Amino acid sequence: MSWLILILAGLCEVAFAFCLGQAKTVIGAPHWYWLGAFVFFYILSMILLAKAIHALPLSTAYPVWTGIGAVGTVLVGVFFFHEPATFWRIFFICTLIISIVGLKTLS
Image (cartoon, rainbow, N blue to C red):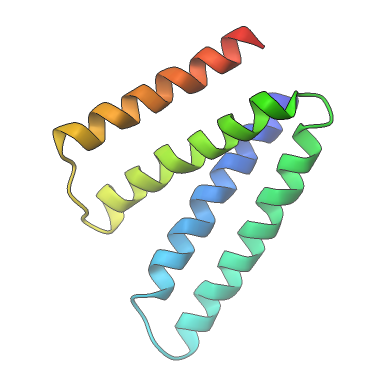
């Protein structure tokens, strides 16, 4: 169950990054709505991470949370914000995924 909570925390990190990206593309009231969503997902991500580390070692949970956020944010950037998907970006994202799976396997 702690791993599921940790994955949800990582997905919330991706969600707050997405909200931040959306907030920079609009002005007026929508800008503040996206910033409100950013704050919501940021706080939820921290709460879920804190809950996950009750059962998982911090030295495993934090890098996995960060890795999920990093991989997810790059994918959001490529698919939603039309950022380049170069060979090296994909290569290093794959190495992050391998590292996350390795940490999960070893703990």
